[in-house]
Image (tube, rainbow, N blue to C red; front, side):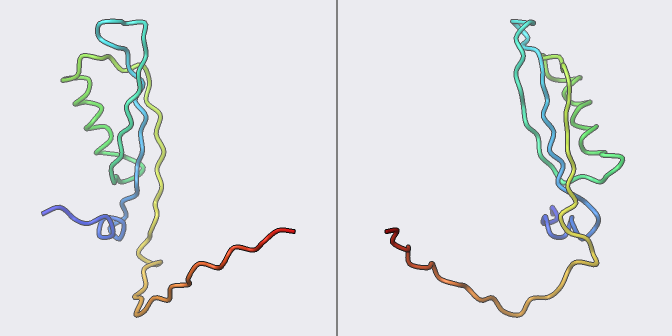
Length: 97
């Protein structure tokens, strides 16, 4: 069973987004992009590098470059139990004179 995003974040994972720029197999001078997102562990990024190895071994379009960012959205010390939720309705639009 896969862990939920909240469980992964509590274990130290953060959202990693990578933009793969690759060459089209039939038109080598044309570049295209592919965006990949997964929860991964910094600074080693095992899932990202596993995907890059998969790409290089299985995909015909050779990689030109990879650009990525990592965001740890929740840490174990930031987790707190919320008992209730208050919703504030929309305010009526003001008329401009």
